[in-house]
Image (cartoon, rainbow, N blue to C red; front, side, top):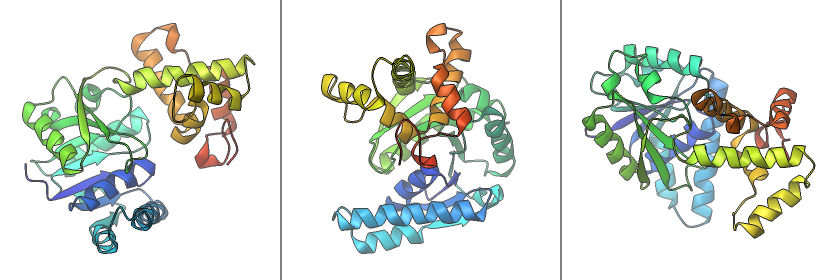
Length: 282
């Protein structure tokens, strides 16, 4: 498949990051969201990110301008009808994603690969919401997309080899490395990472140490570049909770039980950096 144009569903942190990566790589991008205000925020985030790259001399000003010129915003899913690849990057919510996939099945071009950036939800289940499940694949980018080199490529039970190969080529196009993963709750990275973060929240809730001390311990004792609680704030406490719930439901194993403090903080609206407060204040 020749990749000339992609659609990205969602202009949030992951959606605008994915849009930026492809635009910089020379691909035309249609970035969609339900509200014009969300599109404007997403476009502003891309412009800001590209400007930082220019100031760090990692991107030429002309390349920045060209990348911005390749991105078009739209509030209707039908805008992706002529895209070769469509990547869904909406909220980690199964009913919402199933609805989007059913709609994408109706509007996307017959040859299009339909991908999801889900961090934990079954690719097989999402593919089953379409009449072309063989054209569905998982493409899990990591935050921040501009910096992180990994993309987990996840095959659903129905994913064809042709679809997988097209997704792998798209990953190479944006200069990232693909790791092939079987469909399973949490895939590889989040199956290991999110329980570690969850355990740090248990430790905080039990008063073993302060948030700052827990993070300092993991940075100095395990050589982590960022502590687990600060990382949770970056990811979003609601996203961490959603992944733990998927792991708990998927495996029915109590080791994946979300920490009570995590549940309570999400209920309070303390979601991390995006809300100004999580385990730390911003």
